[in-house]
Length: 162
Image (cartoon, rainbow, N blue to C red; front, side, top):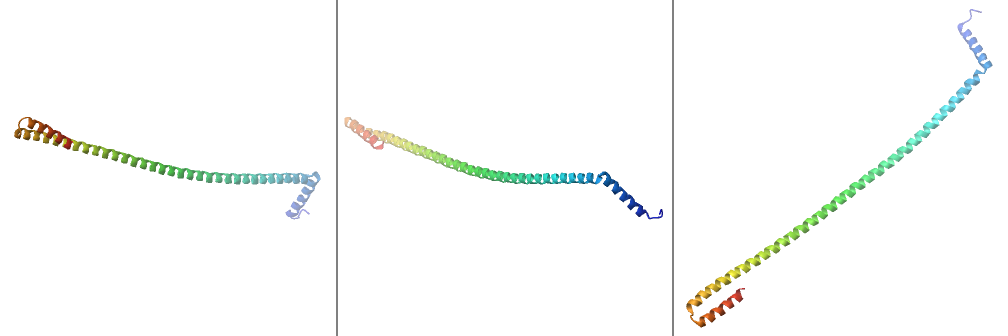
């Protein structure tokens, strides 16, 4: 009997071990521990699903915020461009108005200077004509008739030239 194979004695020892475990209720303890472990694993899986769902919700929320921020940035850029164009147009209009007013002012000053020059030339011509007429008449006409003619001629020349 001692010559039996080692596998036989391992099998006998295994059966005896199982009977002892059964007698002391070890199998119930092992099953309870396995049940508790399966419950714990199920809870961990549920927590993982819940966390995954929360992460997906947060990701969707951040994507919405990102899209909203991009739209807002585009709106800001668009409004800034429009504002810059409006300011440029206003500046151009103001510059054109300024140039137009300066041109009108310069033209007015030029016209005034021309009028003053014409008046100065006329006054100088009148003075020259009066002095020439005075000298010619004083040499050719003598007496009281000459004085009356000279005064009358000078008055006419002044009135016509001025």
